[in-house]
Length: 152
Image (cartoon, rainbow, N blue to C red; front, side, top):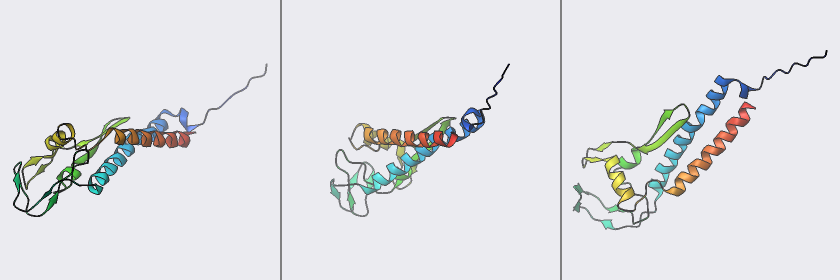
């Protein structure tokens, strides 16, 4: 009787190696999405109303000119609190999220996550759009494909 032995030594069959390689994908994708969101908030365009020094509104007193964002545009960075509050976090072995952290701006006492919700949901100044989410998903898919190739 002839017997054939097949040895499977491809990395994809090693549970620990598979978890290590694929486990990096969500965190890396979240970091890229966070960075892209921050860059897009800073880049603009910001074509809204120009506020002059001394303007008082929503408990904020500007000491310099401030160009706001218009409807449909990302919020205009002024103090950078909102931009710096964009955070990523690992939420599980194969999961990560990008969100606005609860950071307080000492200049005006504003909570970044509360302000972000108002901008996103009530003032039509999206911090992260549906298009951004689709782009992040494509990026994550590309990272996953590269990780799988590394395992083969």
